[in-house]
Structures are given as C-alpha cells and as structure tokens.
Length: 446
Image (cartoon, rainbow, N blue to C red; front, side, top):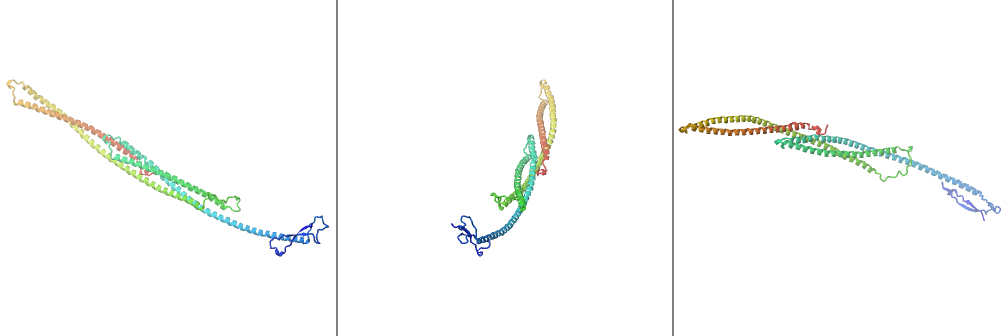
C-alpha cells in the first residue's frame, strides 16, 4: 500500500488579501515518483520526510499566517483602543451629565427646602400667635368667674330682704340679665377656646408634616450631594448589582413636586384659618367684655337708683314716724284731758243729783215742781249727756291712740325693713361689686 503524504498547495500572492489568513489546502501525495523518499528499500521503516518545495511552502504559509495574525491583532488593538477611547469619553460625558443632573436636582432640593423652611417658620410664628390668643381666651374665661359669683351672690343676698321689700324690682331684672349674659359669654368663650385648641393641633400636625418632608429632603440632599462628589478617584466606590432597578413605589418628579406643593398649600390653608380664628377671637373678647361692662354699669345704675328710692322712702317713713310720735303724745294728753273732763262732770253731776235728792225731802206742799226743780233735772240730763259724749270721745281717742301705736310699730318695722334693704343693696351688694374685673382683665390681659 502506498504511503500518503499531505501536500500544502501554495497560494499565489495575488489571491491573499491584506490581513486575511491564507487558505490551508492539502493534497495527498503518494511516494510513487522517482524522487520518492520511500520505496521497497525503506519498506518497514516509519519515515515522513518532506520535499524541499514542501518545506518552503510550509515556511511561506507560516509567514503569511504570522502576518495575518499580527494584522488582525493590530486591527483588534486599534479597534479596542478606539472603543476604549469612545467608551471613556462616553463614560465621562455620561458621568458629567449625571453630575449635572444631580446638581440640578440639588437646586430643586434647595428650592423646596427653602419653601418648606419658610412655611415651617410661618406656621410656627402663626401657632405662637394663636397660642397667645388662646391664653387670652383662658384668662378672659377665668375673669368671668368673678362677675358670675358677684351676680349670684347679689341675688342670694337680696333674697334676704324682708316683707314688702322682697320685690322683683329693676335691680333683680338687671342682675338676672347679667347672670344670663355671663353664662352665654362663658359658653361662647369655651366653644372658641375649643376651636383654638383644635386649630393649634392642626397647625402642629401640618408643621410636623412639613418638618418630615423637609427632613426627608435634607437627607436626600445629603445623599445626592455625596453622589455628586463621587468620581473615579473616590475610594468608597464599589459594585452594587441590581442598583439600577427602579423601585415599584418610587415617585416621579411630578408627583414628588406635587407632594411638597400639596403640603405647602395645606399649611397655607391652616395658616389662613388660624389667622381668621385669631381675628375672630379678638372680636369675640372685645365684644363680650364690652357687653359685660355695659351690663355691669346697668346693674350699678339700677342699684344706685333703687338705693335712692329706698333711702327716700326710709326718710319719709322716719318723717311720718316723728309726726306719729308727736300725735301719740298729743293724743295721750287729749285722753288725759277727756278723763279729767269726765271726772269734773261727775262732780257736777253729784252736786246736781245731791240737790235733787235733798229737795225730794221737802214737806207736803213744798214738794213743788218749781223752776229750780226743772233746772236741776235738766242740769242732770245735760251733765249725763256731756259725760256720755266725753266717754264716746274718750273711746274714740283711745282707739285713735291704739291706731297710732299700731302705725308707729308698722312704721318702725318698715323703717327696719328699709334699713335692711339699704344694708343689703348698698353695703353688701354695691360694695362687693367694686371687685368687678376691669376691662383689661375681661380682654384677657394681665
């Protein structure tokens, strides 16, 4: 069997393009020629010697193979360098663009942080002003306790008036009005105070929301500021796989800005409501204090007028009492005079009756119905009639004296009632009302 030799066909230089690998085609050669290196003499020996042409052809193939590999390597190097330069420039541009975007984002953070800080300061200032008004309300509410106690005490004291002086007069009507007014004022102040408490709570809630938003933006600002300072020479950079994946709950720039804007608008609404409430509180305190002072003046005026009326009535009663006492004295003297007159008439009656008695003892014909007899009889009748008239007048005088005594007692009792009423109204009620709070206390100021 003939030995097979692999022969490489040498390509012509014209068929090998620059930078391309020469084709490696092989043909099978058989050691059958005259220059064959194997034959019958070499049978049984393993030999594979190449021909000189094959040796040159093999070297030439290696030259072109090295040339093609170098050319491809050079092309790959140029492409790699170009790609590296392009990617480096792209990375630098991208990094610069990212840094610029971070800078713009930091400006957005700075703007909204400034807006939040301003709104927080405004809400804080407004809350402080509302707290001052709230304290004014509390002091004004506390100040109404004294007038309420005074009005209640005045009504209770006037219940201790005696007899006909226990009357529903103008003073009592004004005191009841004052008591009702103070109750209404207290209810109004309590409702307004609760509104102030609710508004302060709302202000603090919105302030907390703003502060949390500001704190989040401050933290995000620090993170982005740190990111903006990072560069290729930073020592704290490392690989973070999957860091480019967006979170499902991440916001958009529009929702991010809208969130802060909504917080600021809510704060502005609460701040406006707080301002309106402060104005309302000021008006309420002003109006209620004026109403209470006007009613206090009306009560004091009614007290003064009532005291004048009672004092005038007391003086008139005392004047009538003096006259009654004088009349009592005169009547007592009159009664004594009547009794003396009756006594005197009884003596005259005794004389007349004694005369008639003695004349009844005239003897016989001397027992005559003469003019002295008739005169003595008429004298007795006249004296008896006078005595009866004097006795009736005495009874009448005694009854008059009794009436005068009753009147005296009634006048003295009425004067005592008026004195008691004056003491209650003037010494107790009006004296206590001097403790009525001033207009400044009713306005809620110290």
